[in-house]
Image (spheres, rainbow, N blue to C red):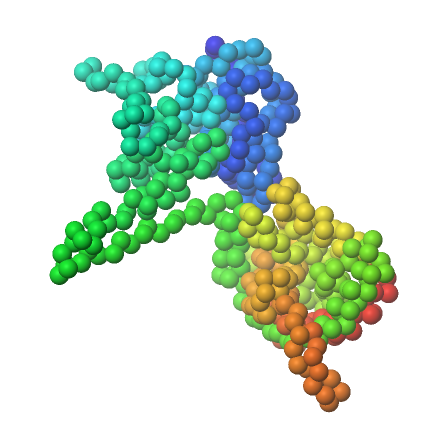
Length: 456
């Protein structure tokens, strides 16, 4: 097949300034037939998981990256040929058509047995020892390809064929520790051996070989120190790390807090659940409504700082972000134009965005454009915090858990449902007076929420 009959689809620009993405799961394999706009791969960006469709129709000839690989925008992703074309395991990109081909040759030279998703390991003896035409040749006296060792002679059952590894780093770590990759249990998609699999196997094999009876009493063997786990900062986790680091390095933040009697707020929530269950209004929606009302009174907190132009940008709309914990980490979906919504509408949007966040279906644009953030960390059972501002915003309200505590009411100590409210703010946009006024307004609404419920 000539280069002209092949179509290479490269990782597209996924928007929002994203420059790379990690392959999560391929939806197709080499040899499959695809249609235009068919989803072929799921990738994870710094914002969210995204399903990527292919713009070509035909037969998949090659997948250019394994699950777990990180590709930059513009790098080859998948290669498609005319419909009905048989995908050969030695299909290679043409150097002129693929400027990144050297990257793939480098990975192949990293060690034998590299297997790309879709090619598998069961294509027969002809696949073993396969090299690119014109590439380095095996020594003439080199041994013939070695067949897998018989099961009977192995100390434990092994998988048929070569281990599914793509990363040169994974192979190097295994080689440096004398680890047999065939004995490593894979946890990656479609049986791919990941770095964490090798590190766990090395740690498991790092215990002292001797027993107490074999070690002289006067020279006790040192205790084995397990290898630390190294977790790559990728996807959402890296985006969170970058944003928090930037926030702390650029924003001169300060935090103020106050204890508030949330008894009336809890009673209002319970009453709404009993009398208007169809509204779905919970504590988070009520707190969100409080934030919107407070930002109307103290617009200084609904702003950001343009450092390049030395200007404070004060917004006339409220895009309310809220912290949501998911399997992929902490994300901050944004309720757009919350200032135009009723409490019930805010509740519905919070529920919708939370569901998308936990399923990994949030589009990148749903995680940007916030002007203020609400963080209900009380769901983790903690009372207080000094939260970090969600850059480039200027403030964040944190809410601790609501628990029964003794409180003085009309001169008597009585049990009340108390919470701690904390406000972290950018000291460039306002002084302590405005920040304290905002927080006091929020506390007053928490203690007397009736004014917020006149328009559900």
